[in-house]
Amino acid sequence: MQFRVRSIYLGDKVVNDFVMEASDEASLRNQLVSQGQTILSVRELGHQKSSIGLFKYFKHEKRESYPLFCRELRTLTQAGMSVVEAVDTLAAREHLANNSNTLPQSLLAKLQQGKSLSGSLSELAQSPAVLIAAVRAGERTSNLSEALNDYLRFDALVEQLKRKVISASIYPALVSSLGFAISAFLLVVVMPNFARMYQNLRGGTSGTTAVIITISNFVNKYQFEVILGLLFAIGWFFWWAISGRAKQFIMNLINMVPYVKHKIDDFYLAMMYQTLALLLKGGYPMTEAMSVAGQSALSVEIKASLIQSLHKIEQGALVSQSLSDAQLCDEVGRRLMAAAERNGAFHVAADVVSNMHRERFELFVERMTRIIEPVLLMLVALMVGTIVVMMYLPIFDMTTRVR
Image (cartoon, rainbow, N blue to C red):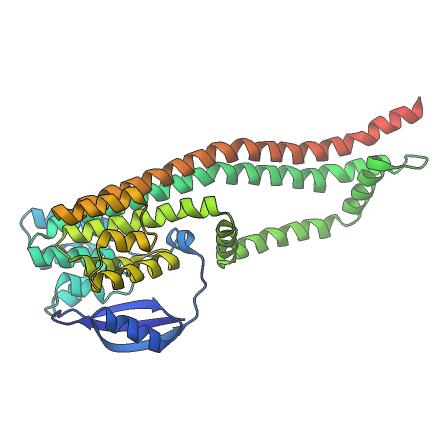
């Protein structure tokens, strides 16, 4: 079940407002209290469909352009403006463009009430937790520009992986759509013409000839119903994809293939370690950074493992061993984090581990693209070729009868 939570950390003046998933309210409260949060309110939202991880992240929603806002805010603050002046400038530009309820205008109203930038962002429902944490770290160190730079580098990594997945899926989608369109054209338009030609065929028919004549007669007789059925199938497919059922179905299939699931986990881990690197560089302690990373985790399994590792660290366990026990890093990652325990450069180690998982995921996407493309072409060619051959086989049968 989903709950909207308002809480505050002891010693922090900013109220956190976020949505969290838990089996019941009691376990949610226990989990937040164990993280050192003071709960202000908990409101039940309902059930959430699970197993949408990667696809949930790539879901297209109407959201404010936070990266664009961060780039413009960074430019204005580096030019000498204060945060309030910079946001006021951006809000004035949106007002002149007759845009209402934009991100700068919403933030300006909260900043004018005396709230900090991180506090204002935290009160907006769609603000990324990573951005809020990065801005808060910049406010602690009085280096907001560097914090915005760190978040923009994080967003660039996310967009890079996102583009790779989208680019890899465009070609298979085009080939599949083209193959389906050609097959539908042959079945609805071409096949009825063959049916009329085969109606005068005398004598008994058998095998493929009988099949193609039966299909041709059926399509010719119920052509309107066939076209309506195809349109209904297309509409149902789009509804299936938009409603989230397709995502859940595909993720269930992925979870059934251990190799593919392991590669998808590389994407989740790359994002998790990049979040840790950003927050640790901004001055967050490891436990607080892991708590924020848990809120931003894309996978329910990764979030649970991160919470398990966090509890062990709070009890005095080593960071490297805790992450390894929770299966959040392999042997190379464990040794990198162990080295960071000696030299204190946790943000460098987290960045290296993130790059390792990112490269593995990119290599997986590239290999799968090279495998799927020729296989998909062969399947489409086989499907279309089978229909064409079945249409022309009766002609050869007719020729044999004439002889």
